[in-house]
Image (tube, rainbow, N blue to C red):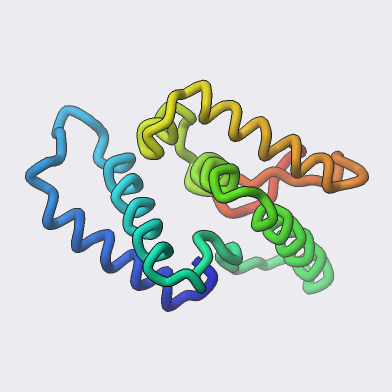
Length: 153
């Protein structure tokens, strides 16, 4: 979400839905993807009701013990990458965030979004290709993992 307040609203509403629908949960499956699916659907519903909201926003800031200059440049890179991610289509952003920031496997993402695994892979590939094209030197693109930028795409 673009604002902290909107993200808090989605989180609160999602957990209310989790408690309301817990009786529908299949205990033979992992609970985490089920909760993510409810959260995504809740965010989509709130987004539909309030057109001025956008689904994804700035990355969470994390504490760092590095030098101020290094932290500044890393923050700039993160900001630039998030700006590029926000330029992607809604569907591409969903897959990027769920896979690289939340750490879900592609088959879990496919289940959450109710799409075939091949479609999920295609969306991820399309998103990564678009991000690579936007950067002149693709070696400068850092991949998102757990909210941090690591490695190259």
